[in-house]
Image (cartoon, rainbow, N blue to C red):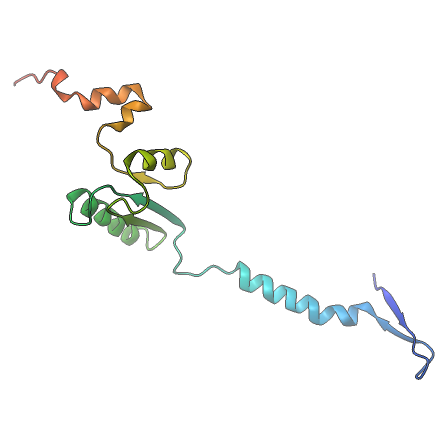
Length: 136
């Protein structure tokens, strides 16, 4: 379907017919190019990005373990998975980090004994002396 626009000018020809498709071609091509530029992903950008809010500083073993986990995941997934570690409570304190995980703002954290506030079964993890170790 071709739309026709009638342009009239008193000084020049009384009526000039120009098809709208002529005007749409450059704008159509620019829109296509714009969508291609916006739609193309950066190949270095990870497909999955996990944010880990760490309570201890960067020298603590928990933080080092998360950094190592991130290196392993990035290497084995060929850059598709990345773990960003934020030590020393940069993102949130312990209780706030757990709330942020529940609201899906951050993805991982370490915690001591505060999970029992939300889940009753976690009390058993806090009481290791209640389990009986049977000697062999």
